Amino acid sequence: MLEYKGRPNRLGIWGWLGGGRWGAERYLYTLHRLTGLGLLAYFLMHIFVTSARAFGQQAWQQAMAQVAGTIFTLGEYAVFVAFAFHAVNGIRLVLIELGIGVGKPIEPVYPYRTSVDVQRPLAVGVMLIAAVLVVLGGLDFFLLK
Image 1 (cartoon, rainbow, N blue to C red):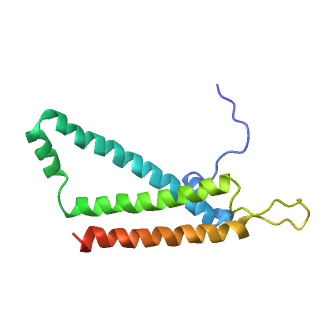
Image 2: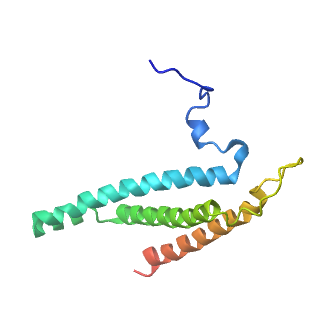
Image 3: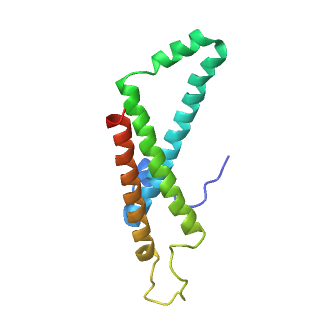
């Protein structure tokens, strides 16, 4: 029998989804996770649909007919939105892991200063870039076709 060490998770799903005292960065983290899972699901579905090509032209045309229509166009746009956010936020996370955008290290003397004040502008910039990409993608998806 496994022995549990530590505190039990009393918050359940909200403990994973909720930002709590961590604020916007925690929500970006959660959204990054969810978009990653969504992109993985889309990737698997994409492989399944395109594998119909191996069964001939008739099977390919039938598979493509099943994924045509307005609802699938909206779904493709949702995949684009998820990709735009996930990619730009991933760049932000890489920069933070490399120490870029976290500020200079300081001696931990009270009153403690956190790197949130330095990371927050980077997070806001990421959201602005993602919003611009989403709007431009929306123009391409819906107006320029």
